[in-house]
Image (cartoon, rainbow, N blue to C red; front, side):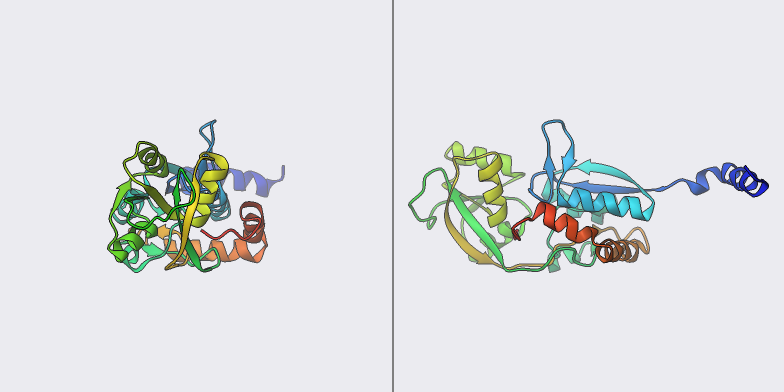
Length: 242
């Protein structure tokens, strides 16, 4: 070890807290495959989890994860309880009134919703629909003036369907297909509809000046070196649109 190395080490020791990573408080809901999932081992995974981890690694942040219901995420960011929220979230005008958003990180493709039931071969018309609270699918049903019942997560929504509380459930086409493939093979898609689509982006607190610009620059860098495309290929292998 030479003298310069000794000096450098000593300076780092004296600085102490000054060289510690900033903590980035991240909120998510692990109920929207393939963006976010919660394994049987209690570990988070998915496209958004990998992206946020890359942002933390590249930006020198310590990730501090908080799991909450989707409908609580934007409010938690807006009130400064967390710094960002990432959960396959659409950058809608209503949400933008409360929080900032990063640049989009997934292609904006036509959006589709799906009605699903436990039996095929009938129309969803006139049936009470179950939907996850706070989602663009809930906003879509409201815009139609349709009767619906909202639930905190997809698990509660499916349980309500099985209990006969609702006649169908409604969600993003890709999400419903994911539920059928991974957890609820008894579900059957009975109708699909085109819904308004928005950019997928990260909700960011306005209490941290400059954070949006920093995260935008990190997403740019992750895209430039090909890692964003690697995530796209891994988690959306057939161009799945949610």
